[in-house]
Length: 259
Image (spheres, helix red, strand yellow):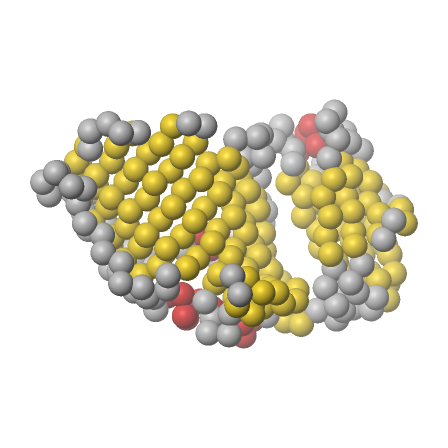
């Protein structure tokens, strides 16, 4: 179940809450689901504004805990901790992050991805500019590995033999998931946190076209480096951890396999 929350106008006092809810069965199935919201335990009166939309008006001071309950057969709740109000714009932080991450020559990435139906796919990546990366993915006991150097791709399942593909389109490095979801809208600073011992600014925004709801949340240090990132979209719940920025990483063909 994808749940998104928008607070309008994000200032102390009267605010309109818009709750986006979408099940894996689509908007039609979502329309009949009961949705409830509470703020610090107090119920919020909601009206249905579309198949996947619920709306209510509340008085906020900032820092409240908003709980959203969706009446699926198994039940479900997610919570949001509101930032201090008014919320600070984050365009300057985002701009620095885009510049810094685009200038990296190497980095590593750990990824957890689920559709929301129970199975989690875990992958590790190493990237080296201008066009090399390697990855290892594990899903429900099976694994898949890739080494991609320029226009040559090596792949294998489990511990099987490596397959070589020549003439594959080169993958530019660095490239990030958020590059595919411009323009970035409602860029806001939610607060700060320590991630891997580093002080970071927590940033959130919506991305992509209006017909595909996508939300991003980043934890960015003072240099503009992303240490953690979250992406939430229909049937797509992705968590990233970035590290080893500009480290001496080497991507080579698998041992015993001729290039």
